[in-house]
Length: 336
Image (tube, rainbow, N blue to C red; front, top):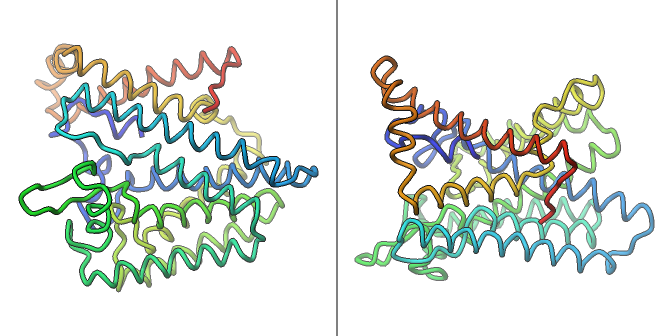
């Protein structure tokens, strides 16, 4: 997220580091669903262990609700800072952390109160129900699809995009498409259960099955990150299952180094801290001269405009990787 969210120049970004304009899939389109998938895996590992040790669901609910509220509150605070830094016309209500908080809350409640069979039933209901909602809208076109129209009705000018002249809008982290995002999180919940019980074969078969079903489904319901379509849930979820199994084999079973651990143990802190840094640079007027003098001025003449833009993004990630390494080495882990 840090890499793709912070290029030096949004007009010069390599295609794999951009989201698909509408239908389609790029490597960048895997980042957010992978994060939500891992949220589901983490819920299964953490709460599953506590339930097995005799903790009752009623004892865990309060901490789950409180954590979800903190994540959502942090997202709202980030958007307040963005509203101020970028001098936006309207405050945006929904966003990345707000979606993570909602999905965490609902998936954790499913883990606490629903059996494995009912969790699978919820996953199926989310996929089929959201498909029915999108189909009822009659079109998947930008702004006029059912999800965008619903979000505009609920959020109005407080969505990501809004056209006052037409009354149409769109929010890629809107409420309607959160149904698809929740399905991704529940899929992670079930993958985490398979991992916790050592069912590696189930993870592999699940990854293959999800991707094959996605390829078939996308013939009638395109893979679309903006709408978080069910075909997108299964395609990205299948890839996430495969990556989870690969990481488990490489790190847990073969002892390879976990290079991303420092980011992993402070993931939301890294995301929020880097966002606060970006907003501060914008508000102070330092972002453009920093990029121009530190990167574009001496890289663009020899390498063109794309290289300095990527170099800035890599430097941004490296800076925060260093910060996270220092925090991890000192045992400082921010729990939201």
